[in-house]
Length: 389
Image (cartoon, rainbow, N blue to C red; front, side, top):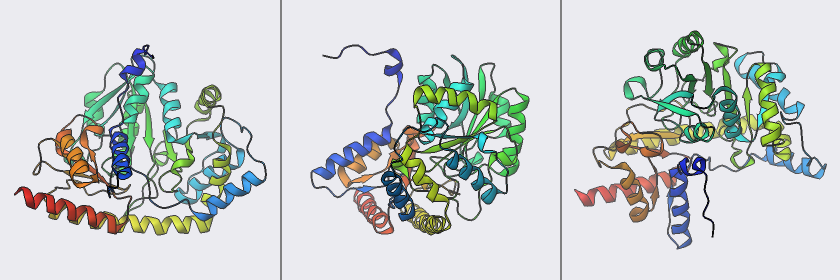
């Protein structure tokens, strides 16, 4: 019988949305029709040009280890993408290809945060960020943010909450769970302030490409020394391929490449060759069509949630989430979400997954499923709420 467990492992919290997904799968195996509005995974299959590139790579025998920083062709393609999309010159030596954005975040935190130091981040925010730091015996310094700040850190909040052990700041724009962007002028003010305070700014740009009404700027446009993290999972729809990237100053890349050699050996080879096709014009046209579908889903879901009594205090600018205030319906969103799953077969994520600040009043809905399924969930909730009035 296994009895030994390190304190490090014991301190890692579960990812609640994955607990919900596990239970949803169990209900489905019993014949239940579950509507999935919980996980942040696009429902579209991998784009055909990307899949064909992977097949071609396998047939060509491209299945050996690659350099830990990624194949040169992909590093160059990512750098070229910044020139095309943002009119920004990025040297390929500044690009580190990683096993998902999770690998990028782990490497960045490992480089920048010593034992006992903290990274400041918004509460609410993506839950695994806290666990990466905890694993490294560092910590997350959660700063409460609400509708007034559109759930984002500001230069004023960073100045107010900076501490002697603060190593830096992590932003997400667009963010998970709220989908809000950091405005350009605020991004510039934050970058300047963090630099003045002697810290390092990391910006999670995983949902770039999935914005509605306005394109997102990259933080590199206001500060070339910012660490920027992105992924092929969201806009490019390659979740299971586990591939991301990090852009940082060349000296930092060398240090993180050394760590990557030991931790990962290399990113997945076939995924890298597949990702080369993601930047082709025919692939980008597919992704743009999907972006438009997400925007339609967002608008439909927000309208439906409001009609049921949810409040949406910050209309999402991007990503594929709605962070809805359910306080008119419940004072315990955690049990509310589990009840929705067990009784109504609707899987959504409680605010408790994303932090502590007013978590009991918020629920995150993910519009990564089609309009038919979203409408089904809204109808089920309407029936539930009408029965309780």
